[in-house]
Length: 612
Ligand code: GCB
Image (cartoon, rainbow, N blue to C red; front, side, top):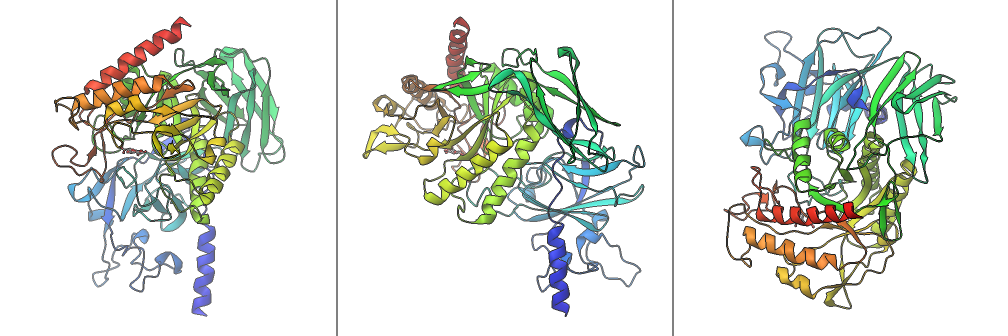
């Protein structure tokens, strides 16, 4: 009987684990920040989550007072409670835990976070959601002792409605975050970046009207750049047959629409006269939506992106992508980037080298990055953390990858800067992997038919000849842009090996080199064949650029990488010291010689593009 009860409770709690859909445009909604200092308990044995029989406290009703999420204080002097958030240490949110306390630098496990707050709604009938920009990797969220749900995936936003649980005084929000790596996860055990744990992005309460504008997509039709297409979705008791207004006053667009029974309305506006968004002129329009009492504002740029044969067309004009890869690490402080300033600084460097494109590797970066790229005029590649060898045949792994991709598309589908969704990076060819990636691609297309799809693939030797390289990968048939990584001159031979390479690329698609690079320690000078010297890195760029120039179908590249970044795989003393050194800039902001070489190349490319 006891077991039956437990099973029932388990099923009920699983049902509550699905979180609500992610609110679109959290960035511009009425909100109350929960950033700042949070109390924490480091819990490597998950003592606050499991009893000594390793049964989850979530599954007992009422939960034991030993469950940390109950935030229990001793009832009297005889009461035994072995935790106390109020007297425990603190961490700043947003922020990874690794770089806030020395003892957490390598920590992989669970930490409990607690924030206390009071909150009065603007209107009694309004609804409130708790919104997380991201939490790496698994978050179990509780408000005032009740479980809101679980979120898996370290780089995308999620929210839970808390309208009925919220009190005017004395709320406590508790989140258990676990960043242990596991084989089935996305990413899996093995990566080349730091596994920063914690509440790495903003946390806030978002207040909406009872019936509110939940989601919308407003984009140009890639097939007809005079037509705006998309939809608006309402949520709430009054969502059916409701009037919705879309206004872009600068473009003299004012459209009254009516939702269907599900609260949705499709948008088709023909003959829209809009200045196109581009890197040279990143024009953003003020867009307002109104539905009854609710309104929401956004800044949206309008452009088209498509391919034709081997060219990429932005607003129907060919474009060469002068790119660079970026990891989400702060250029100003240590650890994960987390502020608008961090994003702007990273993208200013891209501008400084005359770039027009950034590959955000290898997972979705924060919303600031995408908003900054929109206003600064930098095109973006966004990537799902399907990296190296994940569990292709495990259905849970697929669900997880699809969910993470869905959440970033949900967040960024109105951003002009984003032109490419990348499915994966350097994944080994096999049948199950092809099935997995094809399904992911079809899902992406169904959510967003307006952008290009790619993946960073690998290259192979033709008939064992290491000087004749090709892309022999069935997923190459599926992508819009044929992208691949190559490290000739670093992992394969010395930089002048590039002179001996012939590329045999049969696919009739734009070719994009998603990575090349070499490690260099800033300030270390030697001859150009000495590993880790700035001269070696510069030499590699010189030889690689000469080689790439000969690929006729080449439409751009994003060398690896803008800035040195932390990686536990990189242990060479005095050179790496825990950093991947392939940055053109070191972690303190010093530019290496290759930065200037690439800048010169991009200056010439930009000049040539202007001349056309
Ligand atoms: C790659 C990976 C990237 C690594 C890089 C390297 O191919 O895509 O994540 O950091 O090589 O430095 O080896």
